[in-house]
Length: 123
Image 1 (cartoon, rainbow, N blue to C red):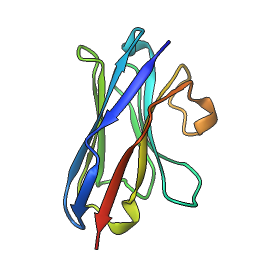
Image 2 (spheres, rainbow, N blue to C red):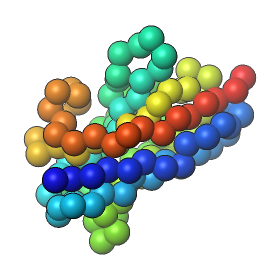
Image 3 (spheres, rainbow, N blue to C red):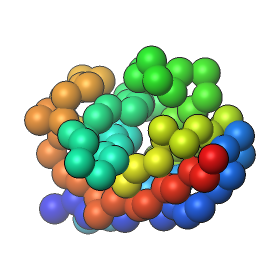
């Protein structure tokens, strides 16, 4: 009942910036906590960031803390991930996800997922 579509991925040089966006449709967006995950080839999907339903609270994985910023605009049904100072190890498919839980960091606690968008960071 909730559809999520990511965009903004692409190729960027190490040290550069990229902004990912996720647009939700189908149901009321504001009731969900929203998260970003990423998955590199041959690796498990890992938590990146989460933002509360009202945008008041955020939490980041240690690997991206200080470099990435998650935000949301409930009026536009969007959640974004601003990625700065990108590193080669940030290369992955990035997924937007929605949860009825409270600030979850485990992928099992997310109810809906986008299709993913590829981010490639060259050295």
